[in-house]
Length: 374
Image (cartoon, rainbow, N blue to C red; front, side, top):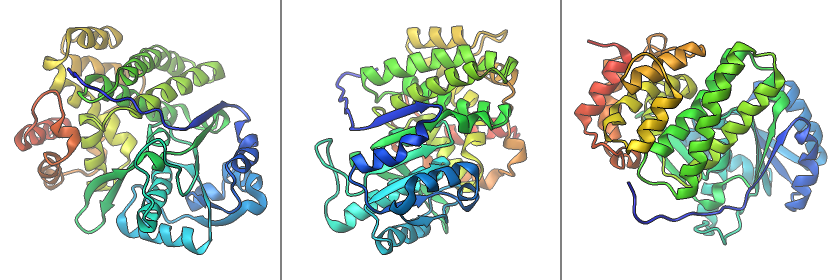
């Protein structure tokens, strides 16, 4: 499916486990941090994780930015850059959702652009070292890419650079153990979607594909077991570790067909990206199922073994077995929304590089089927 490829090994360290947050202060000092801007929602700042992070930052905390919504919009990103400037921050810490991590990446990216020192390669040092502390399980902490929406037109676009990538990720397992099992599984399903996107896409390095394959195998094994026994902490840790592998796969792969459509639809409707991604996954997978290499098709059909012979249905039934259902019916998405997304999608790289050519009519039909619209 591809001939030439490039693999970029970005300078990033990842710490996972219980108690890793205790190393935040020492980690920041090793990066030379003196003044830190903390990017997190107000609710997260007032939570136990927020209190722990604030305590770790101590005198290094120069300010907070808590205006991020469910997605990063251009107007709020401008405020965030001004906040970083007024606080005289030299380092960023993001805590919580993928949107807060992406907001910190946007601050780093636009601040570098503004100062004329935009990073273009792995040899460049970021203006703002960024430590991400996610409560999500998606790929946001492992890439330099972020999505930006225009709040007026509801259009979504992507930006980023190598130096937008967080230099460190602290994945504190105890944050996930306090989450109800349904929400945890939904978060992990986004990582599973990332892995499928990488495996079925046309732009990924061999290492990215290998990581995606292994992460997918691990999630397909451990998610059903966790669903059956959600109080078993060892299973939770196995799932988290598998999501890291899937996230790492995204680092050397372009945003794929699934992620692109989920991002556009979520930004258009301001719906939960996790719900949109999980609901859309069986349909985007079905769309490309007939053009997949035999090895990829065999792997997916084996992992999501179920009674239907059609891959999309197999995946849909498998997701339902672990408690993940199509949520489109509850999100208020209508004809106008899917028409707008179908128009926007064809200009997106993730759609243009899809293994199966996808025009506006194809995407409209796919979204229409996913929403159950006749």
